[in-house]
Image (cartoon, rainbow, N blue to C red; front, side, top):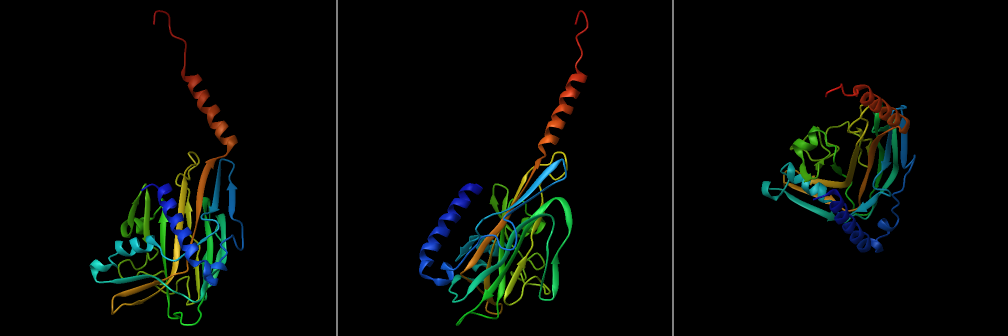
Length: 281
């Protein structure tokens, strides 16, 4: 399935979710705009321009996630292997975005659970900074896990080895690189960037062609994160509604002046290689 068709189907699902949830104050209060920084960031080294843009923007509130279902199945967390997966279980409380912004070149840092995360610097490099707070109410679970699925056309080895091939160069997989097949959760190997009430992620990628030249390509990285619980002994996993779909798009293009320069060089090379034909040829 093409990315365009996949996005259309997911957008349709989102529309249905929002209509059904319109009477739910938690959904009505949701705001997914950029928080704490820009929705788009750009840098250049005089040869290349690289830009990170939040995608989707605004972030979208979801009740279920097919990426998580496919990611679980890819690691044998499914009925065929004795597991009962329940999705869309109701929450009385909310997930509220604390931080959601784009960055390039210099990765931000953040502290959660007493540990610092992020940092680093490189050209043709960027991503997003995303932090969420879980506010349980009433009978909401407090002994929780965070489960996140990634949908991207620039999957790392973990995603390709332990994920679902969605076609068109895209992969869907669980964000559990430390414990594939043994623990499906984001908070699977403490200290991790998550607590019982907060979730932090600062994903990043290089542009697919980050050498200059050729300096080009686009990396699409999207994720959906949900609250979850499990009973490992009973082989059950419950994924609660009120998740968030967020992500970024990183693109890299030649600096216009650089593009012109390379065109002049190429033309010069062609002229230098041409010579008039000799008599009789």
